[in-house]
Length: 265
Length: 288
View (cartoon, rainbow over the protein chains, first blue to last red):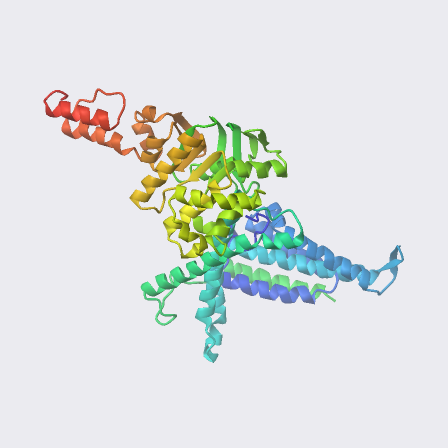
């Protein structure tokens, strides 16, 4: 299993962050996305960092664990940074290196884009680490409810989402088993030419595809056998409701946003 | 080849909140040419142990010797040679079948291990016969086969890679009773006639007792005991305590003692001793 990929893996806990209503969490992320793109000076970025790491600290999930999960993303962050560093030309030249000039603007632009990436990914990771997939889809369904007026299939979309989220770990386990079964038969997809490596993926993908079709069929049958017929007349086992924590979070969020707005130029 | 575990520990996902130690200080030896069974409750570390035998997992700490290869620290080629010499049959054949025809499926392992495919093709029919399949399946798609047939195809494809050690994970699961018996007989004959080392991972105590020379009992990642079947029948309470089935003959003897008032004086528990005691009892002798 790819153990460095942790997005989508729920870490059970009892922290404040775990207890926030999932709807509120989604709204916070939405607002944060906007805020990240509105930041325009160093202090506004610092306050965003503060916001993110305060949330991480409150969640009591080890920072090292979250960082480990960023491994696949580091490269994207670094490459974007480099890209801006060398392409952007504005302000004074800071260093000249092999005939390439690095400008003030480039550094600032690069750093701010990388920061945006970094913070968004950490917050999104934190959301999935502290919220069960079911809670996320419940929240999505609740937040999209107004769209039902225009005949948008909210329930169905939410159901599809929860089913696909539900099966990610299952497929990862399955992939692990399949790749072990094939490795035991001498399959080697870590060595050789690129073409051979692609070819070596077939023995992994075909069993995985076949088993996912089978699972889908089983699931559909099981749902039908239990009389599933869409949203009509369904009640929810978990009713989402705001608690004291949520109101405190909302107040702190407003305080943060106001101060953030004042910090930026 | 001998297999030696020396203080082997294995931890899944170390340094994460999900960190879980599956093997704790395992030390044991599986002699070349022996037939051992590994039994244990769900979560006892059976499948982790079995994946070590094939170098699919490597000890987090401790030492594992597989013939002339030592883990951790073996290089790529050595690991590949281990995978050829140790054949691993997984519980679900669906996880490995992917080719268009059974024939290609059978040749997949030997091809990966660099065998001469012309030579292997001449052996196909024999190996099909060995596992109890008909030649006509060769041109069929493996996905059209029944579960039992898939299992046999997986087994044949493993045997074609000429392993010295057979590691079998619940090989009889999903087979009908007759098929189960046939498959176990096949392993027995491979063991007896070709001197294969057989490691049978199962929770079917009856199979373990009937076929294995030694039974390794795992409990929560540690070796609870290593006993021969004739010793293990006296460990009824211990087996029950760690959630294992007690072999049926043993249960039957317990039943005779407790409910029928039979006096049990035999060392071994098998068909002969049971029938002998029952006869004695009915004649009025062996009553406690």
